[in-house]
Length: 226
Length: 234
Image (cartoon, rainbow over all chains, first blue to last red; front, side):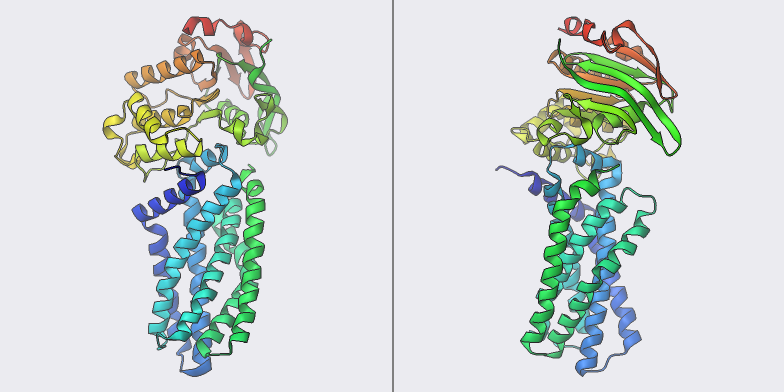
């Protein structure tokens, strides 16, 4: 079987994660912590207000866990200077970005699946069609955040205090997707019409297209400079 | 006249106001070796990083295959092997997984078989399926040498290749370097002392406080080409 460099990098990242389990466990634990804190803070009732609180809590968990995942993914490459070996190799930098993005997306998707289950339990929701409507919104949010964080991690990993710089850069840039994600999720959980839900999904899709394309085109420059 | 595969032209590097390398000129042709000798902080690793394209020069040029090292095409990057202070291997992968991964990145035909062959060549065959985290420093260095040479590069840059190796390991590394040069590979290596590298026939260049202060007659820009190394190793 012929293995492409993209598949090799993705498989290596997944193998390291299975062996270490650091990203997914940390993402899951952080999501749990955020949801527990917010469920006590909001003390949500039922109805529309409860749906909005649950949606907000879910997306706060997504942002924090995504940040941790991005930092961990890039720090694994920094161990023993492996990122330099990758940059020196004939591997196309766009393929490297695509592989790192795919790995980050998979880790976040797994953590978000756990977060949705916890959210349903903590916020006294039902596992019904409304929760299923969350799935596309959360997946699009995870993809957008992974695209943005992977690109920015390429910059921050080479800087002193990069762990601090990553959230300072990523969170403000993610705000449009965050608002759209919370609105889409609240619409889904509140049983709003499909049109309203779809409108916010379109904003998420536009954000994803913009940052996946930007990362694909710019990663060569941000990761190559030293 | 044969073209230099590795070349520094008035190369300089500063970190902020502090110059680390100044006006370094050297060239190494196919099948030849040059050794950059110097104390800690002399600028050896910085020189190798610049020539490997991992760092941008502040002045002058770092060239590989006649092209700027910082902007090499993937096809040329495939022909470079670098052994750094850092081993470039993943501690949570096994030695075999590391070599198979890099062999795939470098487009080595039959990555699995090549990885197995190199593990045997650096005497790690018996522990090929142990995670690198469990390796000693010397074993990790041997794996790093195998990683650097796996794709049979035309240019090899070795930052203190014998560091952490015992006598057997150093002899093994020397034999591999000698073989690579006999096949036409240009090698630039750094070390604190010339000993083992001079035995390999390397032209010695002394680096002190970022300047090349002494070069053996065979190590200047013109005379590296005349060094009789290829004949010695063949």
